[in-house]
Length: 169
Image (cartoon, rainbow, N blue to C red; front, side, top):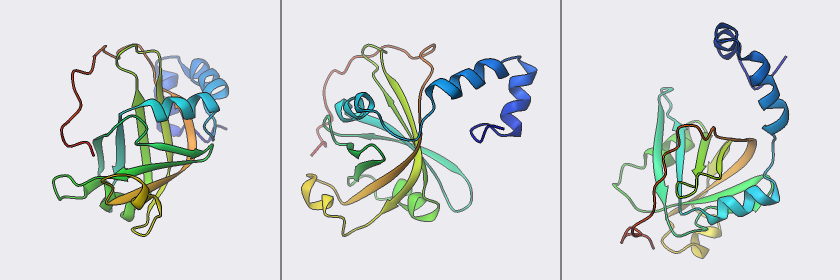
């Protein structure tokens, strides 16, 4: 029995007759570490979508941006992401402190060639030595990588970057 899919996933896969496809995708693409190619891709991105869950169980997704490489692949099992000053709500950081479960979505919108999902357990340590190394970081999130798999390319729109935010440190 797959640990990746739950009963609700399976019910929908059965309804739409995609269980075999889903099993092949899981078997061939889902892994618990970042390959060298995936690490290079992550560090080439200047944005990521970060999903978190609050203590009430509500999910939230935040856009996080910076210069290319602001998310660091420290090794095959660890990502580091700065928390910059924002609107003062600290929704992502607070949610991470509450539940620790995160999802990250990295997308190359310009070519659509790469899209990567990462699931993991995250921690925040205000004394993390990377706080001093990453310009503008107030906190650093460390993600213990648990699942890595590609995102489907079918409906990814193509965009091109016009300019970086003036707030990027």
